[in-house]
Image 1 (cartoon, rainbow, N blue to C red):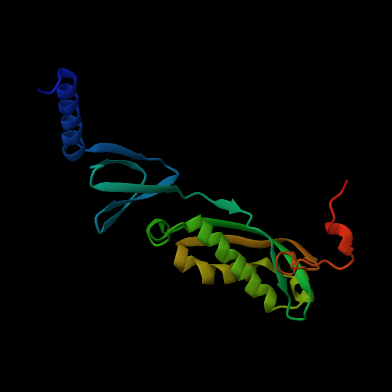
Image 2 (image 1 turned 90 degrees about the horizontal axis):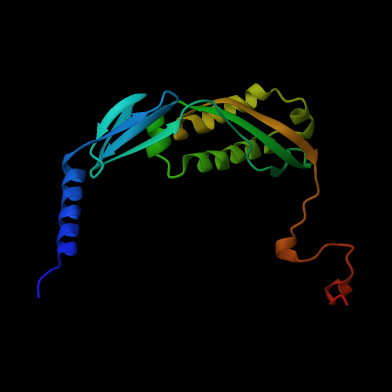
Length: 191
């Protein structure tokens, strides 16, 4: 019992594709608004815009848009230095300045950056009074963000600003299950 003609052609087809993947390089294009890193084993090479040849079986190219990016991380609830609980809305603008750090030194760079931006704002709010933040010069917040984030993420902070800043009351409903003013009969089934 031998192999069929269809199986033979399929094996030849797979062999040709395997040889092509290992021997014939692919042409990869990096657009004008992008930068990339080429990773071949432990070797990392930074690629500028333009074309490059890549052996796709041995090499991976990671690329990202390096133009100015603006993000709006989730609001932060914090207590100021003088004990006022506030909700802080954030706007964050940055440019990728070190593509190698951005793409290879961070698992999910943008998500990690946004979380750390929230941490920086939280730290800033805790160190200042409500009145000081009301009269905030956003350059001081941007400089703090650059100092805290630039080196670890390979970014240049263009601006970190507070979009909303308001006193708030914080209740922990998930852990206590109790909200003052709601009657105990609220758990009954409605008819």
